[in-house]
Length: 172
Image 1: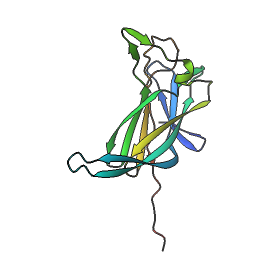
Image 2: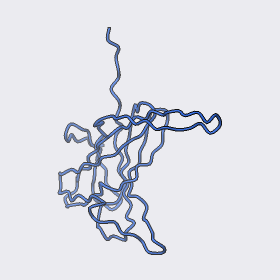
Image 3: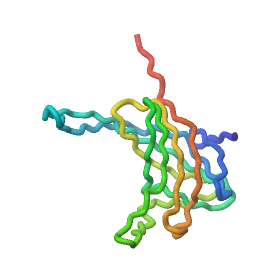
Image 4: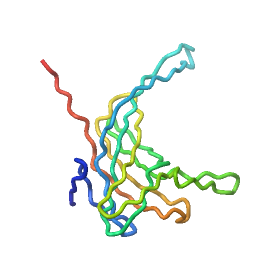
């Protein structure tokens, strides 16, 4: 496995299923915001609040091939699994919408398509909502073409190394 350094982030070298090379950086935590949601207990009818931490991350998709590639950086569905405070997130293109039997085609701007030349990178931003701290996060970028090749973007699967939260040490 080769390791690359780009913008201070390590990248995994992966060859996609269609032979074009893309790598993804370890996610970087940009900021944490908080959100409070108000609820009512269904049995006691007493109101209560839930405090959420909204973790804003960025990862970089780097073109390791000799060709110009298009990548999707918008309308990504970031579903994931939670194991305690360790998370794995898959970023894939959202499933297509239909109006009756007719597929609704998104605008190019909505997909946030980025054309990257060899050696260039594109930023992919995503948010993780949690009711506690996130200690580690790995991202799998796996865009699916729901549009019969209409937009010509890269498809395949690439997974980052896990981001790890800094260890908190007590000050005396």
